[in-house]
Length: 404
Image (cartoon, rainbow, N blue to C red; front, side, top):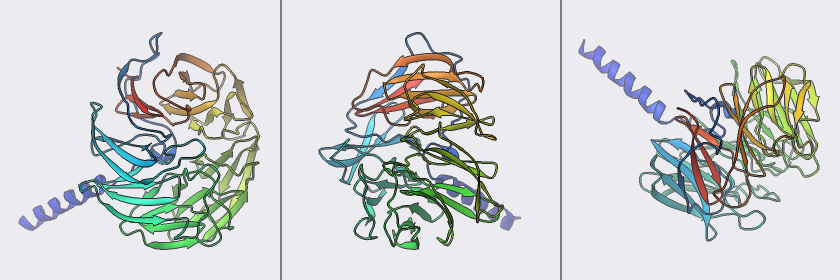
């Protein structure tokens, strides 16, 4: 009986440890941009949702906040240095850590969203330097320069992808001829595998990790091709051409029901690729030139894709099965989209924050307001946590009440 109790305690401790080590994900679970929120308001007040609190002094940047260990983590650039801010739920900055130089040229500021896994933070600068920070001690455990150490190549507007962590591995795409996409040991920074891909440059997007029945598949968009890579071995299983004018493919693909949707701006559009059962090959199901979002993401709700375009500046709904465009609307400016339940939350490049129904028949705007706080471009992807909407606008993080 005593032995059984000890085994039970060990099992519970093991589960608690694993839960504590669950990494944060860019755009939430599955990178889908869909967040749980109970008791969501049916509409916002006429003046917009109440600002619960705001946090200033975050420096320059376009990264999103993440939530772990009961804290908020967000990066910003101050005097050329990348800084990770740790903020409590009351909006107090409790700690801050410098992790090295950040991107100071065109559109200066932090780009990549930090990934937190337990007491470790993974910080990827616009200059291509990756650091693992111990949140308990504040020390940098290891650093890797993916440009000089792994023969990567930086890109016009700086590295933008956020680190994907799974188990003891982290994944990223330095680009270049040799270490095009890599898996590193997240505790040491040592290379586990390297995939030469097609030798292209990286393309600003965070890869998508798909857990298939027979393997884990990493899907990443490089300068002119989409790559499907075995996440265990680094073997490139397939590639599919997806070029656009500036080799910018900043959106993470969307996966559902055995297929991936990969989409790019500057008029390129998006393609739905059906995966074989083991993920070793793909077949094109359809292509849409309408869905050409540059950096705003897309959400899949009840069989329909919702988002805005780039050259196609409207908001639109596309049938997941057929690729048919259900409607287009220019009622608000193009921008970023996330969702909760069957509601869309959009953040336009004009600073409009809006609430709409995920309705395949029409663009049904419920509420709209203007983001008045913060600085620089309106590009950061919002996040919902515990029923609160968090929006980073340059120097400021704003928390909005969107649920009862």
